[in-house]
Image (cartoon, rainbow, N blue to C red):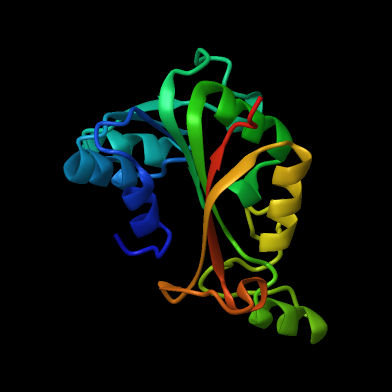
Length: 195
C-alpha cells in the first residue's frame, strides 16, 4: 500500500466485515482487506482497465457509474462502504453519501484536502493547486468538487451523518494541530444519524 489513506482504512474495517469499495481502481484495497482482515468485498469501477486489473487481482468487481447511484444494492447489504480518494470526482456528492449509508452500516471516505496551506498558496499566486494529493493540471483533472476538511464536516452535519472518527494526514503522518491547514489528505469514518 502506497497511499497514506489506505492504512487507516484497513485499520478501521472490522475483521470479516462485508465491504463495498466504490471507485476501487485495480482492487488493491479490497485485496489487502481480504488478506489482512478476511473481509470479503465487491468493488465498483467504471474504467475498463480498472475492471480488468480487479479481475487480475482476483477481486469481485461490478462495472458501474457511481453517478447513477447504488440502486443495484439493497439496504444494509454491507458492513462498510468505502469511497477512497474518489469523492472529489463525484458530481452528486450528497446523493452518493446518503446511498453509501443506506447500503452500508458505516462508510469510510477519504479525499485530498483543498485547504492545505500549499494549495492555498498556489491559489493566492494565481494558480490551481498541483501536489501529491492533487496531481492533475486544471485542464486534465477528473476532479469536479474540491473541498476542505471543514467543508466536508459541514456537509456531514447538514446531511445528519455522524462522524465516528477523523484522521487528517500529511506525508502519511497524523496532523492534529491545525489539520485543515497542515493536512493534505483527510479520512473519515461515518455512521448514520441516531434516531
